[in-house]
Image (cartoon, rainbow, N blue to C red; front, side, top):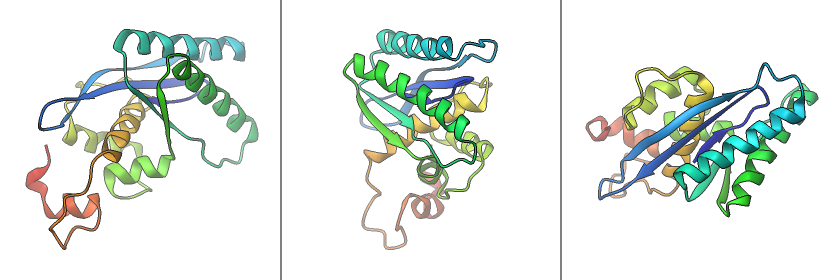
Amino acid sequence: MGIDPGSNCMGYAIIRTTGKSNKPELIVSGVVVMKKLEDPYLKLKRVFQRTLQVIDTYHPDELAIESQFYGKNIQSMLKLGRAQGVAIAAALQRDLAIFEYAPRKVKMSITGTGSASKEQIAVLLGKFMTLPATLSTLDETDAIAIAFCHHLQGEIVPTGDAKCKNWADFVRHHPDKLV
């Protein structure tokens, strides 16, 4: 399960890998929009409840969540940290293993560069798995990217090819292997 935490909008996604191909399949994704809620504690309650609901419905094994990044607005960082903490608490309530990934790590694992745009990530995700024709927001795409990043952490870059030092090199030298 991947979560892109937020205090106004939280993206979530469940991916599954099965069979010999180990190709990820998107099971469900969506967003929890809380912009109309003025009470910050009701927003946190909504994050907690929806996270538990998705976990109880789809039974993921692990939670991958985007970690906080440095920001200039301390109030925004605190709100984001609270939302992240509540989502983590919901996952802990259901005994899921938790994995945190920095935004640059997610971008790097999918595109090969830590400075990729959200739009670039969305396009590349479509190369790795079947996505719905329309995703509601970039928060939803980010949640899918976080889940996919976690999936990639369990994989090993194929060896025996001197040209490939990382996944970006592998993709560049083996476009035929892209799904």
